Amino acid sequence: MMRRQLSWLLWLAVGACGPAAEDLDSLLDQDVAHLGQVIGQADPSAALTPTQRVLRYSYQVQQTGYWCGPASTRIALSVRMASPPSQATLAAQLGTTTAGTNHIGLVTGVLNATLRTTYYESKWMPNDPPTAAQRDLLWRDIVYDIDRSYALVANIVAPASNHPPCYPNYTIYHYVTVVGYKVDSAGNRWALVADPANFCGDSKPCWLTFNQLATLIPPKGYSA
Image (cartoon, rainbow, N blue to C red; front, top):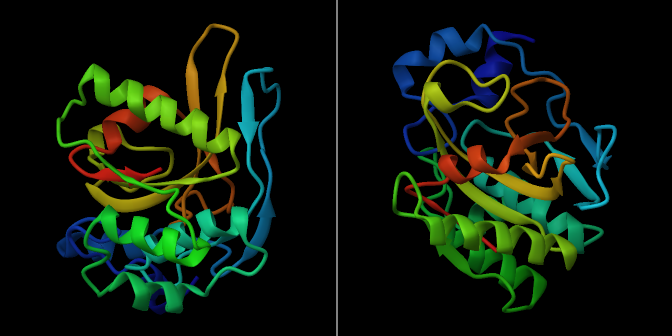
């Protein structure tokens, strides 16, 4: 992929959808494939346990480096809508700028307005690490919402020491969509995340341990 295309995808602004701007050149050397690809996603992994649920949704890679908020919002809406708004429309509604989408409350408002509901609420996790009560609420929200065919949108901060797979070696400020959960045979809890940045280049969702997801959200929040 050409450097100009990567620059367009991975516009890196602190607090938006990537690391600090001084790390741009090294990130531009990393290929992010399937730009703008739209696919109906189901669970890509094998051997799911009976305690699991995965939603169907329409996936798009974020169309600019700072549209992770609009792209994650669109993925969540696609669970409930056959034709969700475009990323550009959602970016305008969210007030997204080159600095990103300001906070998760904006996502909550657009989700509710678009779906004509009051279902979604903003849940804040200011404590880092999160408290036991915040972790318990996050898991309850994941199970409750996914069981009712609602995806969650999470605003995350991923330092180099706590990265999901394929993330570049910098602190990433980002939005992602939670589209499934499972509990494995050992009792470990997992969340399925659709990531609009597509760092792995395969347009597939990724299973994160619940413990990791719970530590990525602080000091931000999520819509559930």
